[in-house]
Image 1 (cartoon, rainbow, N blue to C red):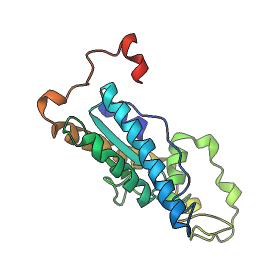
Image 2 (image 1 turned 60 degrees about the vertical axis):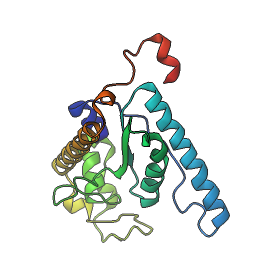
Image 3 (image 1 turned 90 degrees about the vertical axis):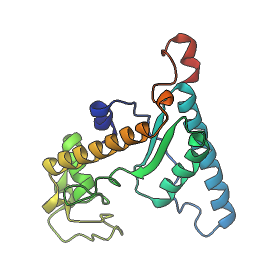
Image 4 (image 1 turned 90 degrees about the horizontal axis):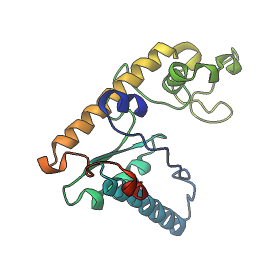
Length: 199
């Protein structure tokens, strides 16, 4: 989705940043606070480097649709955008496009459709068999949403990806337009070797 967005609207897709799941330290408040703290610091540092490199709009997308991840992104962005020379937001990939033709789930209709659209060779729906599935994210199936055997298709995935990419791209343009005119251009005159150390 993000690659498609960058292809259509411009921009750069940063490689994924992986963190342990939100409930990794569940039941241990002191570990949860420390865990949250280092994540915010890591993201803030990344966002500050992107801004220093010259980027003016930073959109952090949670690929796992966990509200606490989006909160972390937005918390990390606050000091980076506070001076008004950059703008940013944290969101799910379909926060801005969610509708009948755009959604998300857990290994069900939407995620399977996205994979069928982009990496069809990695999808084997026959592995699910023909019997009933537990569609509540619980073991043994781990599927949450509509049965992918009945509802997933490459076409559904292509439409979902396009809608999400368009919505994120439009939001990026909106954020860029919200900046003072002198801060709407890439922050460096050119990306030449003397600046490579910033990246």
